[in-house]
Length: 168
Image (cartoon, rainbow, N blue to C red; front, side, top):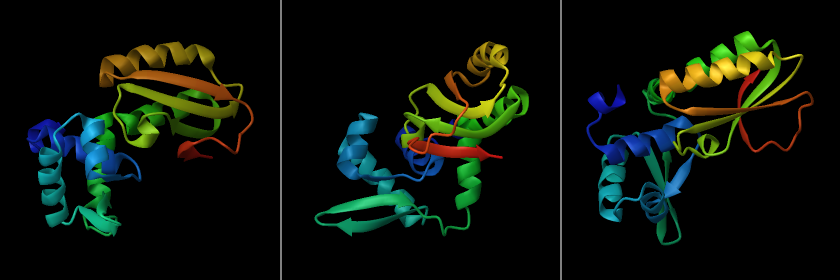
């Protein structure tokens, strides 16, 4: 879907990076992360900044880029990226079917804005349907071509480094 609207693969990677989570990045680190030339990343960063989708700030001799949360289309682009990644549907299905989910976190690469192909989740709750996990892992891979790793905890640890995606 996103590939038909946006023809530049580098631009898609940047949109996924900045609009899937609250992320920021520098030109060289983005080029290294995407395994792209700094020139191709610079061109796309400039285009997205000129369009107002990204904002930049000086940090010494370098520029730090991040999504422009004040842009009128910020929420729409964030929702489109989320649908592209399949996370919105995944979270909704898991939370509805697993039982008494208190909280759900996305951790790992996706929490850092990296589309590695594996979604790592931590579910907090009691008496969750563990049999459903096997089913959801298979179906999610079939539907969104991403591996799902889910950990279940009964107690909410306060030091989870991830993105809270659901709270009761």
